[in-house]
Length: 275
Length: 317
Image: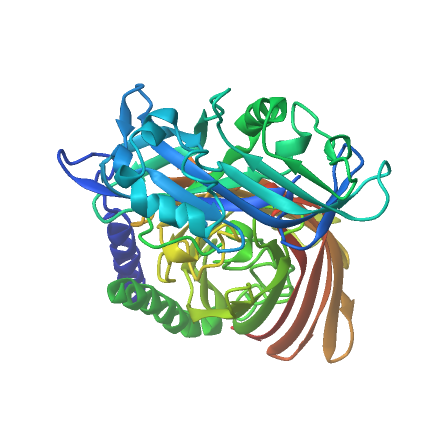
């Protein structure tokens, strides 16, 4: 009996011995000169719901939109640390097409210096500087953008956002097509940049890729801080609405400053986003 | 990892062995005593007891087999209209409560989990041994005389949960972060239990708090506070004793942490109503138990507990 007890105590002691052997490796340190990948994942939504092409929702303007296309250009990505230091991704590599219909939902960055980033900055569309570098300087991206209906002609440039579908409105009879093609023109530069704070740090390490999960709200394009009624912009023949220029584009540019929010960040993984 | 398993198993078998001796020395030691402790981990995923209770209703000292089922729904995705998926947590558990020496008992839980869910990316199944828990309880106070109306028992104890269950960081998407076999961490707990009995009636209250540590994938599940109160009544037949019982139980979770940062939407709380019955005949007893949430706010509303069920068969020592 006594012997048994002694054994039990010995094993208890042993258990606590194992318990005290927890690892204390310091994972917060950043090895100088190392780099890793970063992935931005754009989860397309509309007014809090997931965007499903072909399905219909009603916005606060009282118009019911059936969205058939949502393509846009993301560019000039900058990652910002807590102390304010910025890492600007190489400009030539920093243009991405996001497309709901093409299931192109990620911007993958490589060789980003290891570090803890707390903010993300990017542009919506293509900046004037890049555009003015000319067609040959950006041929492959121009081709990609063209494939996703994100270009006019070279002289008129890129479409920053291509938002299309059909709509019904109390003010027009029946279902009409709509097209919203956001972009710059000779009159105004409608390229905008947004800076988003990350809910948790994005840890970039060698072999450790943070996944920044963004939530895109297509609703704000027309139904944001400024309201644009499709019915008010219907063509003279009353057959369709096409918003491709003028004051509306400046209004939309302002609305799209609130089009993106970072929902969460996955750290410690090394694979693409699955959910 | 194997070392841990062997260590804990050794401990358990050791206790059994010691107990066979003890039982003959103290034939009156075994008595019908209602005891109920709740242990749950991280919304049940790596649950040792899933707040289903932790010890027998009838026998103070026993070894048994318990099956637990926990039904959850999780929102897959970040949108208001993102689909809800079912998550099924099944646990087969060897559990035992064994007196070591006077006023001191050791409880051991060795769970085997087989969990599944069906997200849009295809059905996921994880199964394997879970985190083994060993808990020592010391009887701080116990009414000695048989003649008094009210009998009190107060116990307090400490425990440890070993990371014998696998923690897989890649399961940790936007869906329930608790879809795991274990927390991957050494966790420690403090527990207290108070039992009040009068005649065939009894009331049991328990509190426990689990301190969770960071696992080797730099993830740390939130500390957890469990509480519960159960009213029970003993119906003594000629050969059988039946103990119906009703009560409430609750769990409060602190935020999970990853790399030392709080993970948003991981703290929460849940409050259950529960009911069950246990029947004992000779050395054997059979129990069933169900819990239904009355109020809950888990992981920012992204996970909902539906209900929990448990069935057990025990052999009293």
